[in-house]
Amino acid sequence: MLASQSVLHETALQTVVGSQSYIHPKHGKWSRVLAADLLLTALIDAFSILVIFLLMSFSSTGDMLFIGKGQELPKASLAESLERNPVVKLQDGKIYLEEKEVGVEALVESFLALRKQFKETHPGAEYPGILMIQGDRRLKYEELNQVILAASHAGFSDIRFAVLMK
Image (cartoon, helix red, strand yellow):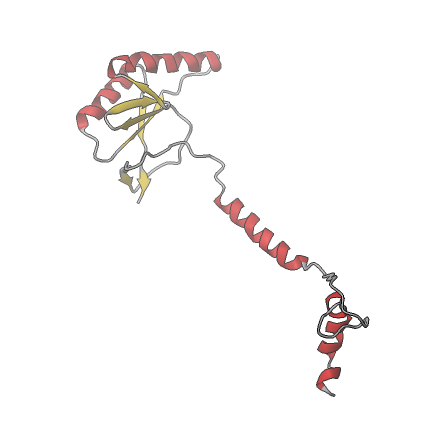
């Protein structure tokens, strides 16, 4: 069998791209119209890989903590997954309660306002008393202690710390 009469050569020239070729035109004159079959298989493969990647990297719990620039959370070998609780962030010598800056003297009142807000939005439910503290691993004890004391005075019985898993 000659190379020009091979099966591959014949099937290539029977396609739309082969019949509109500049090199071997089948219809006798040179044409600028190129009609090509759209190869959907490659596109479907690419989109399915993209969808699988997005599904695997999706977090149904969402990002609950935003770690500031230059802040390092402490590392722990045992930790639980995050739940949505009030967050106190200690950063650059300032205290933030739910992303609002709060002074040390108004910390207990802010915690009590959180409890009151919970009771208004969840009538009849018992207050869980959980508080999440997010602070740098190099944080001084005095800064951390004032937040813990204010939280315990306001009735937060379960104080948790944001950590990174080892």
